[in-house]
Image (tube, rainbow, N blue to C red; front, side, top):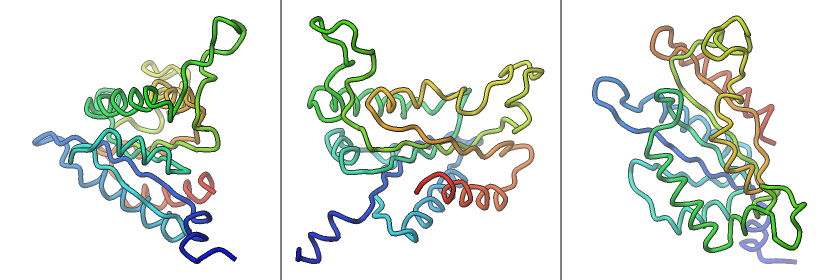
Length: 208
């Protein structure tokens, strides 16, 4: 029978929460984003997950972030949406971490194609199979702006459709992309308690 410490290390489920908030005076203090990250942490811990958290704005070590991605079973991004994308510090984080993960051959080995096998699919060289990725975002866009072809801006696209450029790098590396969670209308018609309740329901239904 293995030692207790060894048993826990092998059986405990592991989640990495990435907090991508970036402060802007008079516009984005980060309180709501941190609140949602805290809810995710408490929900996952209550379900037996070991949790690690990266707060991008507080600084990070690139190699340590690669280690966290290798360690985690589930990666959850909690982020505000600025001008229809994540803050620029998140893009910098992704560029640095995933480039290191490629150079170290730990997150992916390439794009999956080889000159010897030109039929291999682009995006089949990942090493993150078995891992799952989910985004949780806060933004001012109302829920009615999505899934309706009559809406001029998104023309029927879902939240998942809008953020495909974010989730694609994880899918490219072999991870399964889970349905996104979205806190809508957070400036004009905020419903923090309602969003928290929906987030808990989303996690219960989506992250097993």
